[in-house]
Image 1 (cartoon, helix red, strand yellow):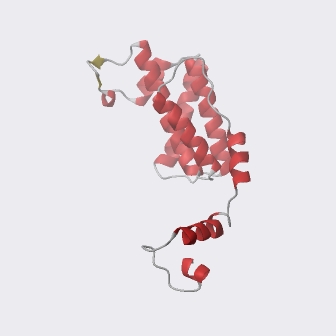
Image 2 (cartoon, helix red, strand yellow):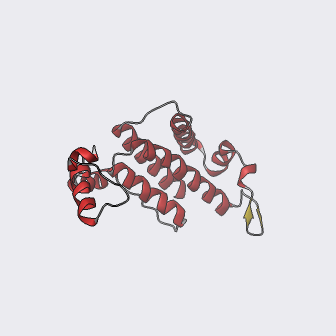
Length: 166
């Protein structure tokens, strides 16, 4: 494909700045634009909580938003699981349900269902379990995610995390 753009043999080890700029413009903008990126970021939403959250959680949310904007819907869905687990673990640490040995937390000794049961009650507990279960279908290779699936899961996850931190 690259060689057809230049109509000659291309060496990947010797692309100059002009060639990179030209290829980037021709290839990247042939399927995507900065308008789509901004619209998607605006469309997907964000996490708003009233307490300090771990920086890693903030980064996961930001990365999921970027993945959505770049149409990487499987990645968004997978990151929803990471966001969920990070928030649950942080909540359980704050509430003292997870033991620390000095600076070490043996997170492997806690099952996700147990942590969800410790972190939440009632409707919220059920929503957390549903998100965990639904994201498992992707992470275990049983589902491909479309745009609307990713957007809904991201919004459901952020709503559940916001409710968890209330």
